[in-house]
Length: 302
Image (cartoon, rainbow, N blue to C red; front, top):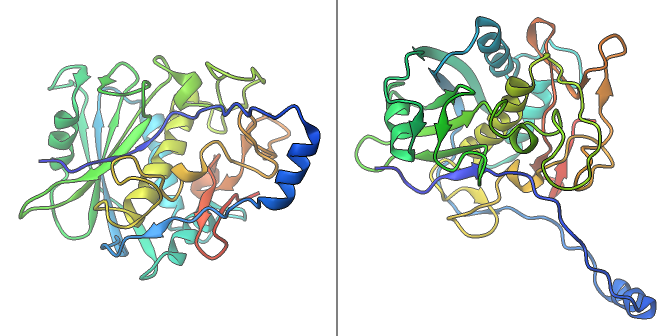
């Protein structure tokens, strides 16, 4: 049976209602200081040490699409890439209690024929994740193709993570390809948002809006998994809908970001692609901000 899961939620645009009396605003600004963002540690186990990430590919992914995601996972454990790097982004997780989490890619299972159909419930995700096994410290990551519908996908989440209960307990996560279903929600900023300011989308660094969007959400759920694997680690708010290491910093990719604007990021002069992290095999990625426990603030790579 699955426990409560945490989600990489659909970004929202916050509408600020300002008082018309400038004197009142000025006086309140003097009295009220912005409170730092704090993810409370709830004394539960974290996933630390060497963590094996097993991949369950559900539906059809091209070899290039699979290689982009595998390269990203391998980049999180590679000190060779130039800075700013995916490895330096992941290093922030070391600042959470009990030290570093080193991710390695384990087995890969292809479910191209969609044995459970193309409309999945949460119970199907847990079943598919179980195919990765339950050995030691591991995360079984289910990735669904662009024509696969998953319960809650696009409406309230772009990905999620959770854990099973009982004698055999394992952590799992899921992320879907939103290219044809809701790219404006789950692949932003590589696609114009469905709501809010309609600024031009950024050019995806690997030339695939759906998969580059998946990278953002894979990063989000993996950071949430290692820092809050069993719903009693680091989070803010209710345990049933927690803000976690990255989901607490949604929509932030570079300095100067605000709702609807991803911030200042790096741009490849030859392709126009936007990124903020280097990876293995010459890959580049756009990674979201992560909450830094040392600063009690969301931190971007650039």
